[in-house]
Amino acid sequence: MAEFAARPPQHGVGSLAVSGEVDIAVVETLLAEARACLNADVSGLVIDLGGVTFIDSSGLGALVRLRNEAAQTEKNIALAHVPPAVARLFEVTGLTGIFPTRAGD
Image 1: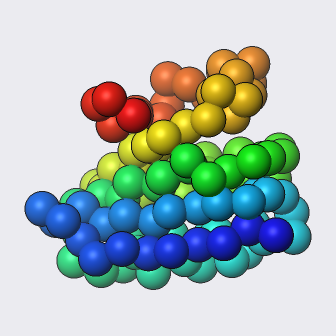
Image 2: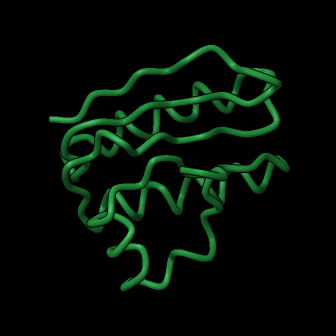
């Protein structure tokens, strides 16, 4: 089961830490948590994936959906602390280029 922890915005950017398994069972919660962060007065959102142990296609799809929704409101989504296994999945699916990562993360 995944856990989500929103952090107060810093410099106008929201932050959401995600940990555990991101699969179909938690996609709606991920979407709701991220949307709540994006609905605040922020220019974008950083999703910290450092604690993610597994992500399936529905989790990837949710991230793409969030990215597209954010772009419609001229907001950005970046990823931070992407574990190697998750980064590999982004690479294999061709999603690496659509998600900027935070410098040093």
